[in-house]
Image 1 (cartoon, rainbow, N blue to C red):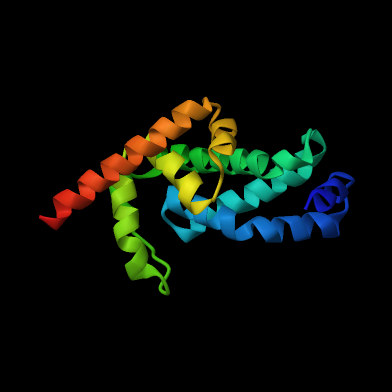
Image 2 (image 1 turned 30 degrees about the vertical axis):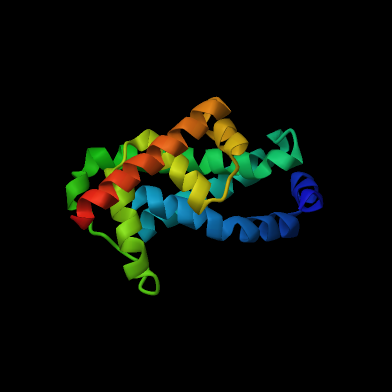
Length: 167
């Protein structure tokens, strides 16, 4: 993958396309979890791809590509959420689920919605995106110990929420 990144940094469009295709599923899962609808997730991914192409030369080390790209994606998701607040209330957003995994995702999505944002983001990056705690710390600009604490507290909150629903 590092060779692909290096080629993309040299403005090889085919290498960049292949690189983005390899990250598409991860980007979609993250954007979909944050934005809760496919159209906004697609917008965030499109903007992320464009920004990555424009700023690919600024990436210092190829091994940090995924972390760098994820930070750009998160910023784009936050931009969309900020714009959304000015357009209409969040409560009016219709939930759109993936028909293949709809039932399996409903409980997970509902639990995530109930968590504090700081725990939700760490859990999404860890479980959905598959990032390591060190990568999450880098993306969110927080110490690794804070990432581990938020993971533990987020899991505890989810367990309490799940236990309360079972009663």
